[in-house]
Image (cartoon, rainbow, N blue to C red; front, side, top):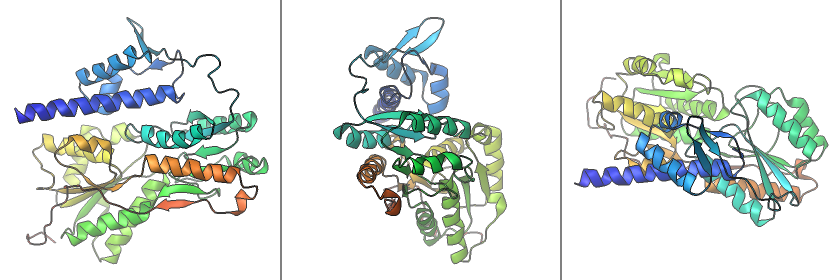
Length: 379
């Protein structure tokens, strides 16, 4: 009976998250009136939820007039802003995001919106889907429209950015701009971020202090967060004199994510890391993907292998094993970024002052790490 109640609560939380995610996409303007919404099948695959959970979320969105399902054609966005409420008479700020993770986007956006709406600003949202061509187009559009300021999540930030000319134009036009989550190495703007390298170092040290000596990992190579988390990981291993093995590391990018997380690819990683007692993951999304893969094979976390990660994702509320992870500030990160942009907009010398901030590292209360100091391990 308890298991059935837990399952019901789990499904209820999942549908609410999916509903909130879809609602935010529409109300923020990422998806506009008439745009095609994702199908049940696509949402099932994207979130890993059951068909019933997806249907309940879509039904709620349809009841609220956000979407309309057309038999034989698909699902479309049916919400549109009423004339006179479209914010044309309000000052605008541009918000460029690289992609919207299901568990981060709504809360980060809510943080930004809570500040900007209070000050009478309309937010124009653009999603690059981690494509530099899209970033070029949106930067050009915002430069032409003359928004009051920009909040930008960089695209493929581990590589030099080719839009140098446009970012120079932003400064020439004195358009206050701040980055969120990341920054470019070859283009200087202030940013509000997590302390990725330090957080990674502290997670790795926790594993080592819990007796783990053979530690593998999965890292994302096309954004600077992934490279910084990898840097903290390897620096900690080096500082403690531990062995590093290339075979225990899996790299992936936005483009090849589906391929790298296919069952065939995960099986290859599993075989390579069988002797590892702990694994480090870029974020909770991939940590739970791999945990599901392990569960299917009867491998338990943390009894058989320990895990650590980043984000403290809300998906963790619905699981028995909560991955120990660095807490992502989510709402507060969005709120502080917006506040700093407002300060820059009131500072004629904003290019000469520092508005950057790194959030201090905090861990959640995860139970995914086993202390093996009293166990005999193969060193």
